Each structure stands twice: as structure tokens, then as C-alpha cells.
Length: 209
Image (cartoon, rainbow, N blue to C red):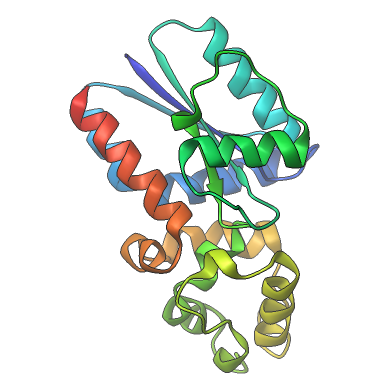
């Protein structure tokens, strides 16, 4: 293995600037893994691919074609996941999206907790500091495990928490790209099993390289 390539959903299908901004945010959130890879002299590549279908297609093609590259898929779960194991994650996507890919390694397929915003909401202290006056922290989900928070509930909570702030309502690319750089990975992992699984798996793979 010479390269780790992470294929991420998001940034808008036709908005290159949005993809670039979110790429920098995800790179910052995974800075520990990126630095560990570089210490092992592994090339680290993380790209945003707009739609989830485009991200999957790029991941599938890389998995089947490129030698010496560890391809990793990262997409929203969109709905509750029955079984959080690697096989369970892949089964969820095959059922939810109708994806197929003979020979794909389920260990390389990872999900964001129903939607990426759960990773942001996990660190309420950072959100409160970012939005400032008018932010309604009490509107955010309080459950310890955000994997169980539905996408609809999460966006409604973000809307309620941010609509009276100076920055205005949560904006997916403009705000998320900045918040991804600010939220603390340890806090996110404590409330989001999906992030915990991704980072622990990457840490183990890089350590073993």
C-alpha cells in the first residue's frame, strides 16, 4: 500500500468550490490520520465527489483498478443502520441505494451517522462558540449516541438552534466547511459510532502499513 484515498460524498454535484472547501474541512477533521499516514510515507488523498453515486463510482473504480491504493468510501447513511459492522454497513447501502460491487471489501466502506451534520452537532461547545449570540444550544439533540438521531430531526434541530444567530441559519457548505475544522475528533467519536469506527479502522490500517 502506497496511497490512502478517501472518497467522500458532498460539496454539491456541480459546485467545485464547495467540494474544495469541504475537502479542506474533512482533511482537518482527519488530521491525525493524515499525519500518521505521512509519517509512514503513505500518500494521503481525500476528495469530495458531490453526489453519493459519484463518490461510490469513484471508490468502486479505484478499488477494482488501482494497485497499491487503499480506497475508502465515506457517505451518509441517510437512514438507521440495522447492523453497524462492516458487512452491515455494506448491506445497508446495497439495500438503500441499490449499489453493487463484486469483490469490494466491506471494511473499506464507512458511513456518516445518517448525515454528516451529526458529526458537527456532537460538539455543542464548538457550535455555540462559532454561532455566538442568539445560538440556542438547548435545541440540539441531547441523546448520547447521535447514530440514533434521524436526518429530519437533526436538520430541524440545527435550524432551531441557529436561525436567530448573526451568521444565520446553518448553511451546509459555508458553515460545515469551517465547523469541520473546529469540532474536536475525540468529542465527535464519543457521540458518533460511525466516526469512531472510521478513525479507529484508519489508525489500525496505517499502523500496520
